[in-house]
Length: 106
Image 1 (cartoon, rainbow, N blue to C red):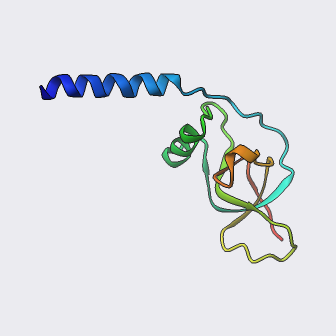
Image 2 (image 1 turned 45 degrees about the vertical axis):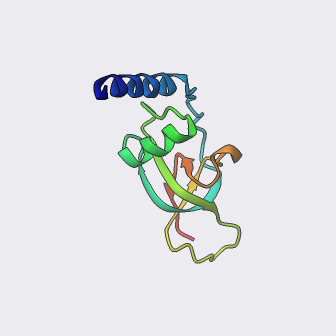
């Protein structure tokens, strides 16, 4: 009984993973000042997990990815994280991820 249940659950999970569409986001020159809680490689496990939740395929991008980012709207804003300039995050990504983040000094 248990083995049949585990086979069914595994099959359902594989089907769901295959059904989630993934897109590769465009990488353009950074234009948006952001305060990110961290900046990591596009191949890191944390970035991969967030990207999978958003349906993004970041494999092969090779650019720094900001996690937990919010826009900096006032010069001298106390960021408390990593101050970077990134591609403007798309609205559907919320503040979870930003692409091509390069360090800046305000």
